[in-house]
Length: 324
Ligand code: PCA
Image (cartoon, rainbow, N blue to C red; front, side, top):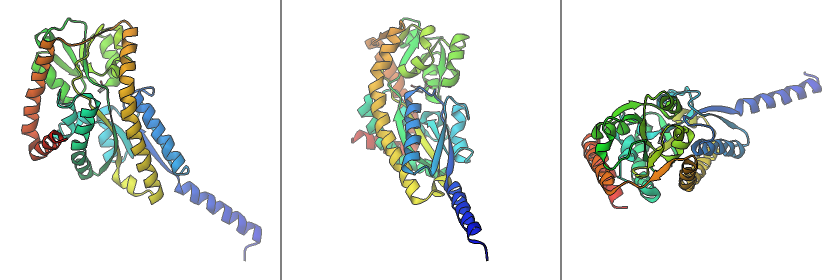
């Protein structure tokens, strides 16, 4: 028989061991700077999960593409090198056109249009991610996309020969259609590419123009409001299934809150970002009727191509969106 004291110590130690074992640690690679609104939202999500799970699930956020580069994050989550991660959906359109629906110019403009498109896209995204062993936790849109350039743009013809930074297959396609030269560069490498003159133009939100200090090189932003691409936080299904039920519920509740909060903050900060760019000496320019018409034509061409490659799923998505 063990003396009482030893037995108590043993009990206390095994309780400690059990709580250490019950604590799960996840890594969350993200591709954008720590101060970007997406990343701040993720950090709050991680804190909410920590609190709601009573410290059982600790999520470490790795911003700025510090753990994995943007295009690698999805595969890392799929293979559980990271249990959870943030991706830019449109980056993965070569895997499946469904990832590109929110990257088609002028299909959905403005936040309410983007939300409708999300509702139409979501079941298909969930199905695709499930087939790859992952789950969609939530999405948040970037603010509307406009054109950064030093040129005067009266029509798309004025974009010929631009050294165009693309962040996705769709933004590279736009370059092709207007006769610009696309170079794919993710946000983390954009400041460098602008400084060295590798690129002199691109399409993105006021948010990325601000984060990358584009105003140090480019003085005009054409506010075309062409589309609102989304970031998604996705989780490895096996990692999620390994959590106890209460912790799973904590993750899902924090994700739902992050989605609501993120959509709201994106919309609120859209104006703030434009003000910051103006404050740094940039002109925020409403596109001419000709430029708008030309860009809409680019969008129409891309939608027709997309419908061809996306088949029945794509048609179902566009039909569902059209009815909303
Ligand atoms: N910023 C990201 C994607 C869309 C956006 O607004 C970027 O430019 O990389």
